[in-house]
Length: 404
Ligand SMILES: NC(=O)c1ccc[n+]([C@@H]2O[C@H](COP(=O)([O-])OP(=O)(O)OC[C@H]3O[C@@H](n4cnc5c(N)ncnc54)[C@H](O)[C@@H]3O)[C@@H](O)[C@H]2O)c1
Ligand SMILES: [Fe+2]
Image (cartoon, rainbow, N blue to C red):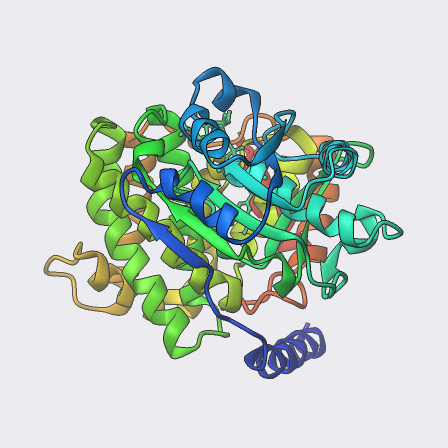
């Protein structure tokens, strides 16, 4: 284990230095209630007279895109809609979107929705530029490199932060794997942060997507690859989520809480795109790949288990976040503060009707999920403590409630 740990830490150190030289600039932001209306003008100014809009059927059914379509028409922009994206977008979704882009002579992509449409749009744009590289060959880091068609991202959950990350998460229905494609070219050129689009988000999705954003902030912050900037962004996101998530959950129409959640999700995105995530995500992705468990829900359930498992290695950083979140009472030691933070996260789950276990996990899949989670997490994620296979198996059994 000692040698393996040194190998992981060495690998992470190399990445930490190498990624310092990447372009970590942010997308151009259109911000504020109603800002989606300005998007068509921007698209027109950029000379994109034909665009592919990538979204899902739920959002089409809610008529959430009607305002955007009206503005595109006003500006004389031809648009083609691909609304077949499934939660946890699949390789066939990406291929369908790519085909529509090509058939309709599109020049740019508008990703409209939660992380699923945004990620589908990102990889579809990559496939347009790399027609000879199948999605499976894009798995991992720096596999695309070519400049993509302009991506305009409009998040409607708060959320994944995908509007600012260099990542897209893809599900492979043939192998039941779910994995990341990471490349700076996947960072959208524009992001629209319009909270009005999120007021209709049902409470359960508000809770789970909000806890996904919290997981991004926490995993980035306790990891070992922070910069001053990512740490500050993670702290800011944490504070905003603790201050606003429950209000957004109980009073969806509260535009201030919605705005703050959207902003928090964006800041968490800035934090984790450079400082990475950790084993919460590694396990969540692979449970999601196996059973289709929604990403935010998986993270919300898994988070307290993994944070407990990190034990002392994460106490100092979790204690700092407990201070930031304003939940520290008379407790003084780092261990006590960390425990308070973890309890508060369990409290979020209880109060927002999120179960304690992922019931879908089956005994016969545990080994596979553990192997895949560690394949994702090691050696890349700069986690506070390196996990081995036996530890991961034990944790997944707990998360699945398989210990009786
Ligand atoms: N690229 C990244 O950096 C990144 C980060 C985290 C997660 N992800 C990925 O993003 C995906 C999950 O995205 P998500 O959690 O945003 O969910 P999602 O995009 O899958 O959407 C979930 C559901 O919410 C509905 N919905 C979305 N916005 C709505 C609104 N405003 N009103 C009503 N309903 C709405 C959708 O129609 C859908 O049914 C996963 O595949 C996950 O792995 C990507
Ligand atoms: Fe996530």
